[in-house]
Amino acid sequence: MTTATSATAEEIARRVLATEAEALGTLAARLPGDFAAAVELVLETRGRVIVSGMGKSGHVGRKIAATLASTGTAAFFVHPAEASHGDLGMVTPDDVCVMISNSGETTELGDLIAHCARFGVPIIGISKREDSTLMRAARLRLTLPEMAEACAIGLAPTTSTTVTLALGDALAVALMERRNFRPEQFRTYHPGGKLGARLATARQLMHAGAAVPSVAADTPMSEVLIVMTARGFGVAGVLDAEGRLAGVITDGDLRRKMDGLLDHTAGEVATPSPVTVGPETLAAEALAVMNQRAITALFVVDAAGRPEGVLHLHDCLRAGVA
Image (cartoon, rainbow, N blue to C red; front, top):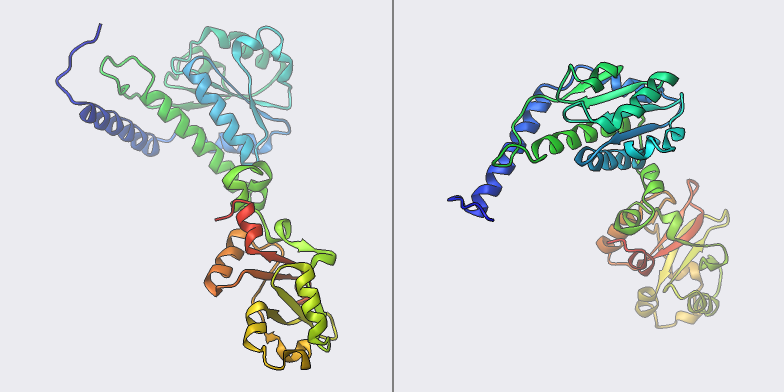
């Protein structure tokens, strides 16, 4: 049976979002006093962060554990009911346990709380009730401020789950920044999809070794054409006596200097001081350079200017960099 309401769907949505936004502002202004200590405890932990919760708190806990794990803090979720049937063995004295319960009286957490007490596993509790069973057992208490749920009857977990999730994000990001977690580390945990592609480096996508189209400065253009055709990148790198990249020859250079082309050497035809990137340059940055310069290939050089590889526009596009 549907209960009639005079509010439109849009009005209800705005009310819900405003209620939850206000709750997040309250949390930011009244951050739990043990938050900084919780960050330090996790940083000092030799094992992993075990996150647990039941029902909606469990769903939120899974996301918090996933965010921690993807940002440099070893973490995983343990279902409290499964813990009572053997999964307690996953929790070791080297770990720290983050338990989530809005009321702090979730029955299913009982065995996990007892296990942590028995083996000295520190508990970080997240609850709105400071005097609850969970919070009394916790070493550190991340107490949520009192706030109304966003639903009309005030019972469905809405505001409370949003605030808990945001607090978990705050914990993960604080740990991430304290660990000086870098983009290349982030990519290690996100190798697939668009994010992995954006964080790929030139070294990971470039063609190296014998595939690099390079010639000496005194190479006749007849031989340069053979190298360019064989490698198929539409470019050749011209090296100086020390093996450094002194210039490049592109298909455009060939067309512009077609008159008497075969009477010249690579050094005479090449465009000097070419645009290059380093091997650790993000592929997205390299693609931006190619787009800005209206070129289709870049040489990847080491600190001394010696070519390590060549990166083509198509390599970036195939990898999903855009």
